[in-house]
Image 1 (tube, rainbow, N blue to C red):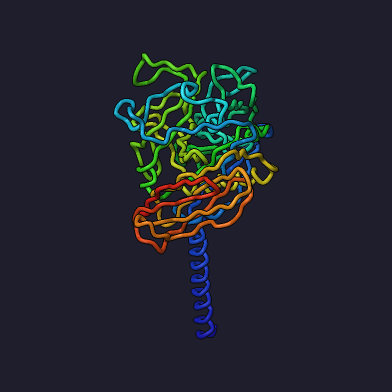
Image 2: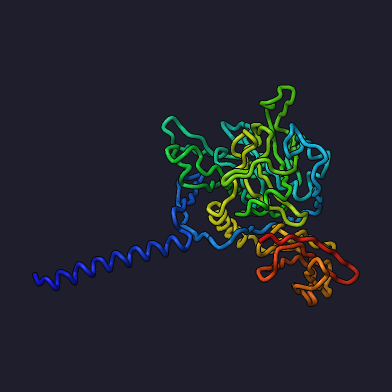
Length: 423
């Protein structure tokens, strides 16, 4: 063989290797690196299929999916002030029957879901969950199945979802629905990959209960300061004796509420120093500004009420499933009955944050941002708009760290929100 030809062939082989390495690098750069595949289990056919990988936007520090009030009237404004007293030296209050504070039939309380498993025509209490789309409930993976002696995940054949369940009875306003599919991550299928490595799942229901109840969004934040400076809320169904106090007995028939600041903020976990109680598994830690509400994690382990934190690797695959659901939701009704400007979300922020506002009728809307000296630094909206809910983004990439104020004016309505830019 011609030595020069042989050298050229070797050179081409080396060039092909370089091209292959560049191609692999591009795949990693586009957010597919070491990504866990999402799977779907059909409770009727018992078949599993795999979703295609979705890109993970590594440039974003924060993102959330959509929420909806539902078409049943009524919403409550949750307490956005830090609690006066907390339980057991934690950042959170003790569990309180939600009906003592709010209306179970109102948003967002009615998005809470009590889960039962069905066996031989008998219902057994199981877990908690929350509506995140018209027919999807967010919960923990260990609620939809358990490992056999070989370490293989065996899915439950049927789970019933009861939204706004309270006082031991089905809520007649919202009814119930049976599961038809489970969505979780491939790494959960075998214990060899780690005990419920990503202990989170979506339950697809046979009926679109969320059309009436509404749903909350899911969200992630890579900035730990978001979790340090904000309050979080929880609605769940504890159903046994408190592991730390045998005098505290829960039977699972009551919707409980507690809220406060987080004690545990880690890369994969968020939580507070209260031991979780069986029945609460799958319940969400959610943030609200009394407009939108968003889950940032689901209860997976009882110690320090550890919630698996929604990371981009979890968020983007789940968001893709949720968006597909919303694309078939039709024209959902969103109640708009007053002027309103939400708190910034996230806050503190860097470099951008969002506001949601609503107007009850067609009117001129002006939204501006001012610095602490009263100088205008941003004009976000200045136009006549139709009745409805709107979302705007304020990008402060060209501004220094500091305190700013967002001011909305429409007719005689004026609202001002304080925001903090931390760079």
